[in-house]
Amino acid sequence: MSERVYIGLGSNLAQPLRQLRTALDSLAALPRSQLARVSSFYASDPLGPADQPRYVNAVAALDTGLSPLELLDALQAIELDQGRVRKDERWGPRTLDLDILLFGDRQLDEPRLVVPHYHMHARAFVLYPLAEIAPDLVLPDGRALTLLLQACPFSGLERLAQASQVTP
Ligand code: ROI
Image (cartoon, rainbow, N blue to C red; front, side, top):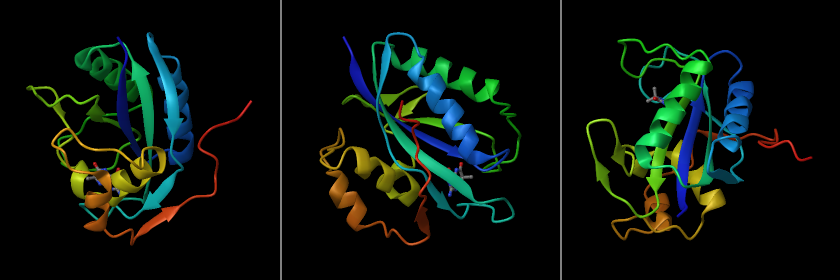
């Protein structure tokens, strides 16, 4: 069985656009998975500590037969592969962040994985890219994405012209 998963991508170090493109290639190569859609890239000021570079974010839709923890392991391996160093500093800069935002209609609360992602409901850099690839989405708790968007201004987000996918 395959489930539709939404993954948030973010980077603010070591050429963020390149980091995101490389990560998308790795997502497309995951076993038992198909990369279904990718949003545009969006730039924004850092949420949290301001003394770090601007972020580039995107959201991808993946259809996968992997379990949530199998996918989490795979995403963390991609993060490490791309030079992610986990520091003690909370909300510090990073080469690559891959977050499972939604996993089908599941609601998971496990030590390693909480789905829907804790902070997705109020972050413009998650909600707007998500809406681009899934405008009619309804969250597992019944809330429509359009409702969340109404409470989350686009301000500060900059949609980049760079193509997020290389078309053959
Ligand atoms: N800020 C922005 N704009 N984008 C992110 O992806 C992002 N990720 C984070 C913190 C440090 C909270 N701030 C961010 O983890």
